[in-house]
Figure 1 (cartoon, rainbow, N blue to C red):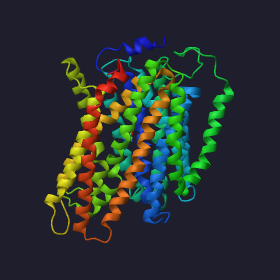
Figure 2: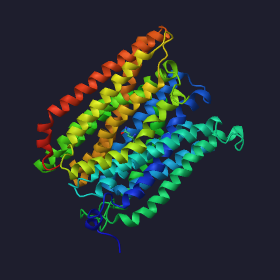
Figure 3: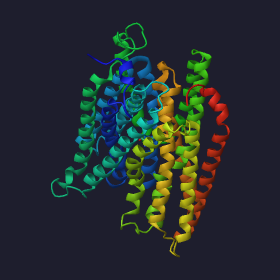
Figure 4: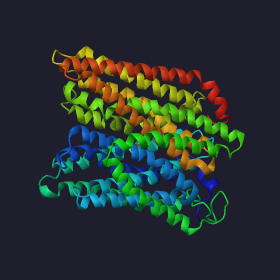
Length: 503
Ligand code: GLN
């Protein structure tokens, strides 16, 4: 007998048991995603002979499209496919993308990437929405669940981000894989883990009751007429048509700007259109969701320096006083490492605080997220105090900054997933989750612009001056983050009104 939604949501204890299955599917998906992401720039430069700047621009374009596609993936899930079929279709596309890359990464690079971009769009937002449905709208345990889920995300990110590129470069399994096959195997590994993710999901489905069923399914929670098959197949065909379009747009990065300027306003117009169809109380909640989404753009804009200016800073201005570790390795994976341990603990902290009636609400958590982010950037600024005349400073201190920034991420990112599911109406869950991730795409975009400005400011200077320029920039960013946090806390009474019964 399959479970009813009521039975699933009335679980005892801290976590619903289904969360573990979703945790593993998402973990493997993130392994595949971050594994590929970690290889992109290096592969383009060392294997495809791209210039550094070109490779970075194309990397940025890929990131923007990946997260922009989550909106489309979420929208089609709400309207036609349902979360389960979307996730499955997205996963299949990701497998195809990775297999194409495994077959001949040199020849089919952009084709494989384009498949992965579209696939991620269908997979990523919808699995998070399903986590949300394991909870009743006002279950105070949801933030802890999303924090646990977030640990899974980062476990996958850490493993994939480390293993794939290490195999590609020949740092790992050097003697067992012939040199000319290393990149094929590395991309192939991404395909294998994605297969594991989907197999795991197939088994998970049985325990999900009615969660994620296609609209029009006889058992679906919202009753509607059966979905005509042509619509479903239409979505599959349409997503395949997107593949060559994405390929062209990633290859010519000037299109990214046009795309970014267009997609945001279009999604907003569409959201306003949908807002016209809901009750006033639901509309208020959607406005509140939009406030969180807009703030998150600023958060990710500052946070995402890690892939840009901070990686240059790590390469040029840091020593290895932390256990002799490589500063770039620490910059790339330190955050994920901290999250794996801290996310479940912070989740339990929320549960404990709730039992004492002192749990901060979402607005305060977001505000704290910004304040930690700002504090972390002030610590980055302070690395200049330990610099020698050659402009080299302490990796230990840098790692402390990462830790503080990570605390900020944990107050905002999993909580953002959770609040999207609480504030969206049932029929817009996927789309709102997609909008949340679309904000990340803008964040990445903004981050690239900030990073590029800092890079221009330091051009032609000595390493010491570069350190000064970067750290000055980080101080500025720290200030913006703190201001955003304070503003958020100040406007919280108004947003709270919009949120009504949602905490
Ligand atoms: N690192 C998280 C993930 O991969 C958050 C990404 C984001 O929202 N930018 O899911």
